[in-house]
Amino acid sequence: MRSRAALFLLVACWTNLPGQFASAPPEWNRPVEPFRVVGNVYYVGASDVSAFLITTPQGHILVDTGFTETVPLIVSGVQKLGFRMEDIRILLATHAHYDHAGGVAEVKARTKARFLVNPAEVEPFSRGGKGDFAFGDTYAFPPSKPDGVLRDGGEVRVGGVVVTAHFTPGHTKGCTSYTTTVREGRHSYRVAMVSSVTAPGYQLVNNLKYPEIVEDFQATFAKLRALPCDIFLAGHSWEFGLPEKLKALRNGASGNPFVDSEGYRRWVEKSEAAFRKQLEDQRGKPARNP
Image (cartoon, rainbow, N blue to C red; front, side, top):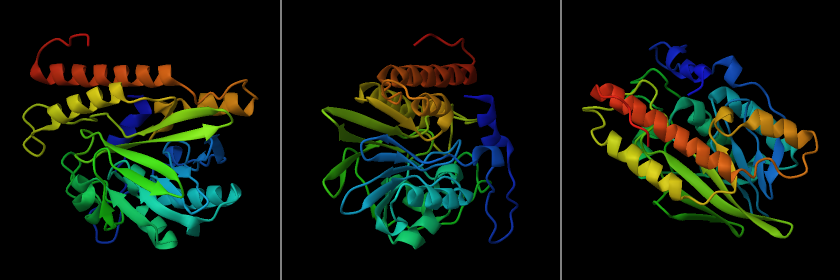
């Protein structure tokens, strides 16, 4: 994990008073000019927390909202791209942490979109992130009751576009990654928008609040290794190399820099290796190479 990712554990601007929520670290929420990633998939997030807009003639899908403070950036980005927030029909989230879900309540209120989640995340979203197995009430966000639940391998359809949900728990009990296939010119691309797979400061061994955490992480890495991916997208910019790829894109790269199946494989392998080392360290044994 990048050193600045440690801010997730160190920044606690929220105090335990009614009506207050965790504040965004400013360096994670800097504006990014919105852009088309591929086909009908657009980036409308901030510098370090992602939000992806998938457009269709019959309405749009938004994946993640960043922090509460990210919402104005998303609204501006959607408008700059020539779309309307009111046309967002489905709202999806990768998981119920404030840096990915803090803006859900406001986006839902603005758009009247149906908010669909992993069944394991219904209560965390309804509680606004309070009672998290790792962070307790520290990173609270405005609560939002989901309108429906997803199923593992289930499809969300809007205007001919199909988005498939893949349950990838571990970072939270209900982490969900998403895939869709888009066509651009004569080519089809398999797009993966993956949830976080880190265990920042987590107790992995004998975790009474999440007894199956190790098994969930192991199953998630196996699932991600098998997931077809041409376009690699993720919840944080550093995970999929957003700054470098965006620079290449705007400098007129000959190909789409977001076509990065090898980068995706490396990310999965590196993430799994970090998890295994953390687990072995907690077990008091030397880490083994995967």
